[in-house]
Length: 303
Image 1: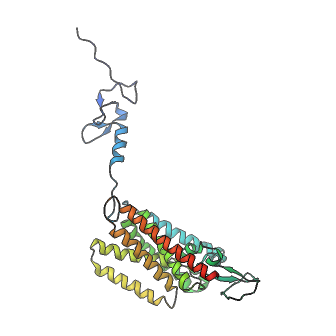
Image 2: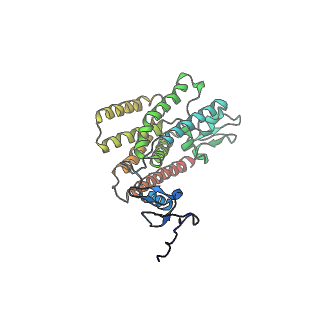
Image 3: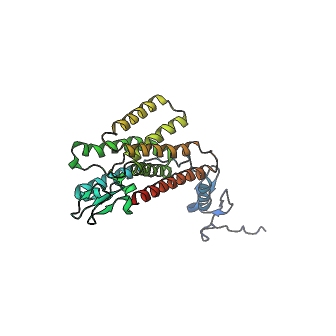
């Protein structure tokens, strides 16, 4: 007489009888725990483990592939919110624009720096410890009161950020992209501090020039048709020359140089396990250089 067969149950649901095994771990699984596989079925845990072991798709520069330019959306949103804040309270501009050195008078007014100023005046700007201006100025734009160009300032910058930012973000991935943007903005502010510390500046142009440099470097690295890219860069450089008489060319040039340096590190780092480390090290080295230059200039201005 044959013995009765042993009843097998799901390893996750011991009360549920099961006759199907996971093709990966060989444990019995019930219909609720079954997941379709290339061959047979797998349990929930094996499916999760398999997903973790699959390498994430990467761009040519090491970033994770993204389906939407979320960072670009956020940057545009922050610039627009800051501009709305300016409309509500105009003092935001004086408080947060990039300024190396200036004076605040007894009447609360803002004045150009004078070495032998009265004790009723006190210093403002980066030299007064307001280091945040190095970045906050990149999110402000000319107020409406400045005339038509005041409105066009933010409109032109946001259109440029929308057009260039989406392309650069899709190639670099979000983390590398935001790092590039912030270092470009910082590079623009530092060059303003070094060359024109008494000149108040504001606008996202320095960061956008950095994105322009990134667009050029990436196109060359990928072997793209450079005719259109060269026309774009010619227009960018032409605006750099024109801006010398209209806006802060120092901020534009500083952003362009910083963006170019960062993207060169992104584009030409070895494509192996050390790539991310080399890219991060290059960004940290540039940040350290900008900080050193800032400290040195602030020390000189405060002397």
